[in-house]
Length: 255
Image 1: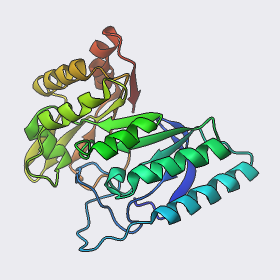
Image 2 (image 1 turned 120 degrees about the vertical axis):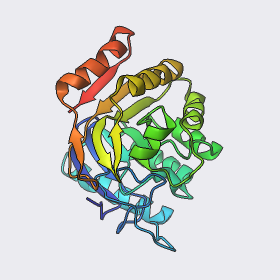
Image 3 (image 1 turned 90 degrees about the vertical axis):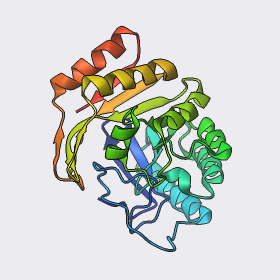
């Protein structure tokens, strides 16, 4: 499922409310630093020279969308950057965030600016500074062990480790939402399960270290590129959330 418009929706998000989506990756294929087995956008498409919407095109599309929705009497709860890959890969990402905040303040000042990121670009200071300007930084950590992270997320950077990602996440001093997809299954003959006691223990330790202001845990909800995956039952998700809530973490489950 690819998004073919720069500004789309609003849609009702399971986690964010009435969300106006922003797509700043290519509109015809997925471009990401992960190739997650559960991604609703499918697998990455190798393209030698991917074409991204320009900063000017993104500004114009968002302004037009906000004007149109205002005429309809619709005010989004949130303007959300996600879509066909990793939004922080856009070379003009910091400027795009500044533009978005300006347009938000003009047309719908009550809306939050949110970015869903896979955390792989947090080693770039300009990306971190831009994210700190946003209202919601929703940052991924699907596993806290290297082997399971590689099986689930399939990073394009071979040397990326969970230790590095966790270190980068510490820059926010807990002022972010940690997002994790829990799933089981198989891919390329390898077992995928980040709900085992060993995997959960490593993940809980990471949560304790990062102490995020909010935790979103969720399950696969749409067709996935790897067909041998299964949705985690609600009962299991409640069991995963229970120790977090006992410690006082604001924990949201999306099933």
